[in-house]
Length: 68
Image (cartoon, rainbow, N blue to C red; front, side, top):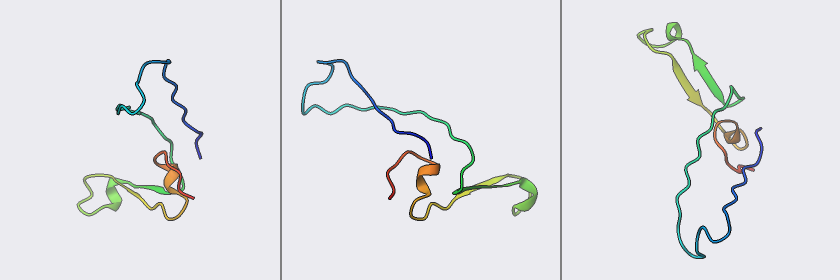
């Protein structure tokens, strides 16, 4: 699922040993570990529900990670 992420910074931007913070925003499509329930199928029938079940190698279908 997905592809690798590579971040390149111009030379001299960050000094060695210095911490930086990087924010990554991304979107994803439905995957094998993400399930949606329509409002009609939930308690109270007023809000939809999403839940995830990543197990050993499906976590990568809903957030970028190395899960093998």
